[in-house]
Length: 212
Image 1 (cartoon, rainbow, N blue to C red):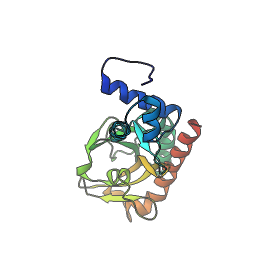
Image 2 (spheres, rainbow, N blue to C red; image 1 turned 135 degrees about the horizontal axis):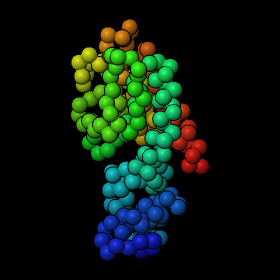
Image 3 (cartoon, rainbow, N blue to C red; image 1 turned 90 degrees about the horizontal axis):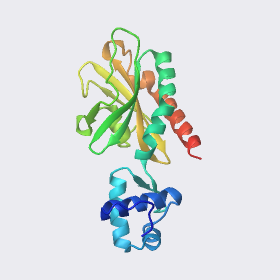
């Protein structure tokens, strides 16, 4: 097994050797096994566990490459000005959410300046089981228009619309616009869905450009 650092914690060292390899060259399970001197079942088992933790993701051709955990800080950096611009335009709070196991975590936020506003601080963690539009967007459950809305689903009196930030076909984050129901004149999706989709696309494009 070839790796830059060995700590003596065998499973961890093997896992990070796989991450190091896939960072350099996206690789299939059999390629990981050959390069690192593992059995193919072991390579697939460890790579699958790394996918579950977001350290790797798997392409349609079966190769493994770096996962969304490594994109989070860069994505947050690119997201903040996009969210600020969106919030200035609509004067409603907009946020970026990412998946962390059974939870979603807010990593960036631009708050509306109105006295009546809805927001959760950066670092807030909510279970997927609570529902809401951001959870649905992260899980890939969106309408044909590319967004999903929620009205008083998680919190009474609050509506939201979210759009996934896609890397390839994989949702790695969700842009969420949060609106007090008294200001919703039609539905959150009809009012802000297209804008949420545009913001999500801008973040994805900026992220893709930064990793070329």
